[in-house]
Length: 327
Image (cartoon, rainbow, N blue to C red; front, top):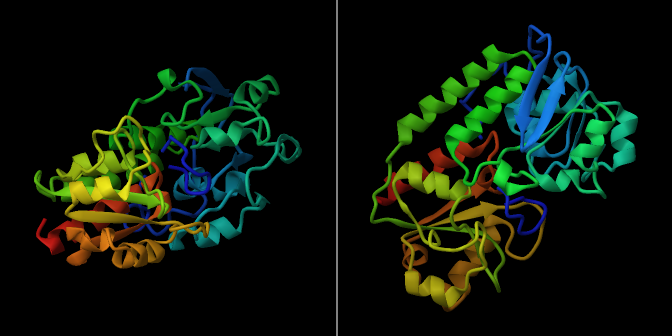
């Protein structure tokens, strides 16, 4: 779910410890003579490694920064969380094009040679504009395989293999395959270290936002991928939507063993993890939940509930909590 656009149905990796401390430094590269890929059903071609890349939201920004590409970025936009400490200096060196999504005029004025987003909403007509129109202007525009305009052209469900494949593909476009391989290897090692850390009798509720109506994680999104990796059950794994609206009476009936709280920075009802925890402890219905009575609450950043450079950190945080809870 997009941290700043409510209830997006599209949903990698934690940099801390996942790549070297030099991840944000300029990357050496061997520019490809030409790269053509199929991305969400569209052909995306670059004639040489991009030198003027523009990222349309934070997840894409942190992926490029982690690949050491800050010197080849001409703009960022839509920051939703404090930038990861390892990437702060590199981030500060790149101009911010817009507080939210830049509009088409701002994008064209920046003269990018590559545009990247992990969210479909970035390419709306009132944002950067459709990718087809950018392609007509000879601007290659990449979109995450988990957020394709036509879902049939992308991945049905978020997987860590898919996340790592996206990192690899982006690294190839920029001619920094070695750095991409380094990040992927580190992420796989971290994932392997916590695989199966939970038990199949443990039920986990992924609580994203809202108090009157709680929005929670269903199947196919990143929380579902984390649940599968750790070997636990998702309380709303039987839902028909990736981010369904739950209700507290039903949640009380299911009585999850552990509740994961998304820490969102946008300031809405029940957005912060602290606000969620306070609500759970003071509401008469939720105060009786087993996870609340036994303080089995886990906080992860809102961004890490999307496929992002932070998501492996969320896996590790939940794995550590499950061990502490004996679950």
